[in-house]
Image (cartoon, rainbow, N blue to C red; front, side, top):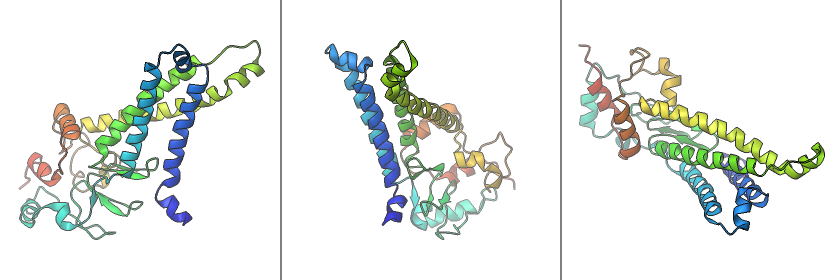
Length: 265
């Protein structure tokens, strides 16, 4: 029973939710800009901040619980047999491999996650904070979540700073501001991490590359023969952003690879 709770990510998700709302309550209860707005009867900013925090929590659970792009069968993974035979007959297209764990034929850009026990389409990475993989189906929502989370964290950082009150000596100052200082440390640490993660993902999206491909390029068969600056999936900045955020269908990356890779024969 305990192992199952850990495996499903219950504790991680509970910790994230509790930490989010504890920090939010601290910001509302102390003499911050939020509290001063409430006392003046100006409820717009407190309501907007609360809704932003709520949206970040909802996006967190959306990304955490949704299917990241599990490959569940050979047919669902690759399309028709005729399409696959045509693609693997091309000398410029590496032969598709069968996963050594789940024994399914992997689509190009897929990878088996040993934590999730599935192959994931357009695998990016397994995120321990959401206890889920980031793949083709939830990657865009993961980036949207990071953006909303960063906005909420930066706003919370500003609110926490607005509540720090001066004092004549160190001890009463610490007693009066202890909870706000703890909130500042938590929010500041998370702000830096989320900003760095969001920046990395936006860069990789702009060149149509995944974290796994970027970190393990030398071990990936379909990228091994390309130079470091070459990417067979890169269609330019605007097209890459459009494809990532606006194309919601499953992409046959074998066809994209074949189209953008010159035939060596």
